[in-house]
Length: 536
Ligand code: GLC
Ligand code: CA
Image 1: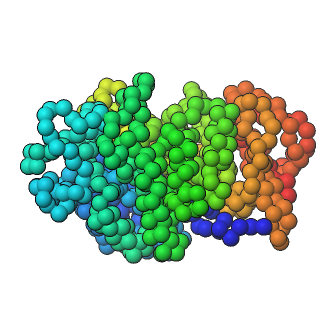
Image 2: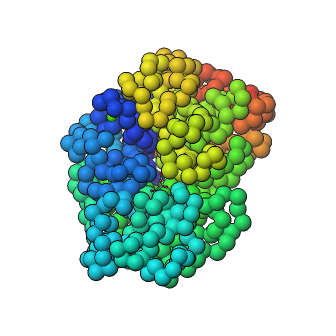
Image 3: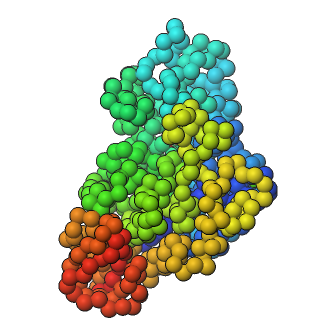
């Protein structure tokens, strides 16, 4: 029996994250923009993805490159204007592509008129929309830290004799979600974009909205990563958030088929899982970031996926992702000498063949790499504050490599971040014309998903395999076609691995050609070999 809810578009879709500054520059200022994305809409169809998540393009002083918003209902001139957004949305919908946008409402920009009013006086009606503590001395009220400045999260405000809270940069003051007017203002901005036709939201740091009512200090935790020197139990992950998720869900669902996916904290899949709500009344999806932190190991990936499936409440739908604009790209993380491309085929297959909605990050389809940038090129506040530690996020945000012309075809002028030095060799145009390229591997997998519903909605059963092989079966019973069974084998090892295989026909593989019959029994997978067979 097929559950009707499996037909929700976002369960069947493959998402593609566009970081708009770096995708395509349409007006020669070195920064990507909405018209640039629109010019490339056919590209998404060619590749075979179904939905875009576009990182923020709203009005912003760009202290955190758009994650600091100064007008929730307008487009920043760097990216275009509202008419450009509407035109992009319409053109996308004509092609059957959905567009999900970023909702950044844990904090605003310090240049938002709300904050300007709030900080002017303790009696201003907007004052209580943000978080304040009286400033009695030089010691901040507690030990909470600003992640991107690596210092106390409390900043003085002379006009009111108070501290305000900002746990990212000082330019991102945090909202007081306990204030009902603030909540209404945010819900109003949410409806604004839904009314325009946006297909949903990716909710930025969604488990951070509520802070401890008593502002207690976080307990110490031993860790080498500065941000993790404390357990974030009081400045993040408060239980009040679940009520707000229900509100958002009700708003989104009142529009029919819109979708909410939360950034609900990477390090705790259990917390992310709980954000779906116990009765399917929370977020439609909560990002599963666990793959971002896994070492190269079949066993660890399998354990991670298994754990995620177990943690999810019964009606929740899984999702997987390997890269985004905040973490080093997985091509870079998993590179191993000459085998980077082979490994990228293994991870692409894992991402696109597990049960759950996949999220791709722009450029992963050509294996974009991360290169170290000299100090003078750094733009990300985190990278600047932590230099020379190299934990900044610029390397994963470099311009998309379209072709081998000047600036990789991204812009005719010098881009805001340097293009990777490998662009002449590694770019979309070159890879599209090479049948053996990573781009064509992704495109073939995406076509396979379309022709094999079992890969999308089918059940998943793990198959016995040696520790360095990840193997599973996807099955689906369709009334007209009977049962469809499909098996995926991934050799994570650089050595041959023997497996036991069932008889079938190759659908896609790195060694065996599609259409070849394989017989049941022992089969030796070559190093990094990928094999997908159909048994129907
Ligand atoms: C999220 C975003 C990140 C941003 C931060 C503050 O983690 O993904 O890019 O800097 O929130 O808004
Ligand atoms: Ca531009």
